[in-house]
Image (tube, rainbow, N blue to C red; front, side, top):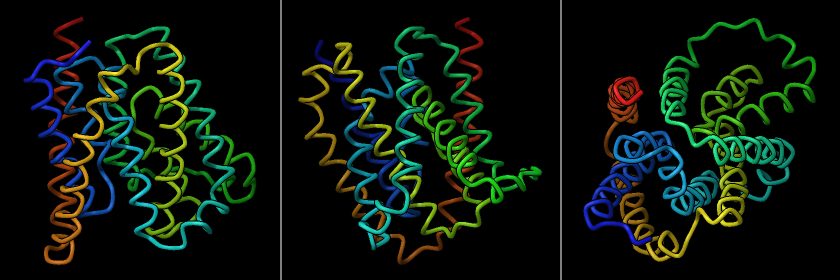
Length: 250
């Protein structure tokens, strides 16, 4: 079913903004685009519409950090576990299709905002690397499959395993990329990803590519922390709006 013109305009503006922020600080596209779209549609539709743009952004972000093939080899086990978790989360989303997942998205945003401040006693993460990789990989995938947001779980994992920012960017984008790939497959099998989304994709990618390029140029001129503060403030507002909207509708 073709999308109305106003929805296409809203999507274009959202993708422009989210990709610009992502280009300027190296992350943030799904974290911003999903809740913004979820304000005007259900969470499942928001995730479907961001599938191809997300795959594009993930690939570009991984490549921008260099040593992409080394990253593929190093983080493949974690990414495959995230893909498994994403498949589980997507099946739950397909079967339930509940407005309550907007509240889960809001909770994921709040967790993201405070992930680096949460003091958890997770000494076992470094002692039991296989168990930790399985737990955080599948957990991140399930959350990503349900809400399009893996970052909170992966940030906590990266902090506990003492990953650098560059390593966090590569592993999170790799996990998200495989998660989106399996979602694309499952949504297509279940008839949720249709020709309408496929026809929109090339136009949306033009907006995303342009905004990413502009964001990368800005990154070199304006302190990253300025954009991070803006994004965090916006996410607080979005989480509040999602909670309010869902509460009113339910």
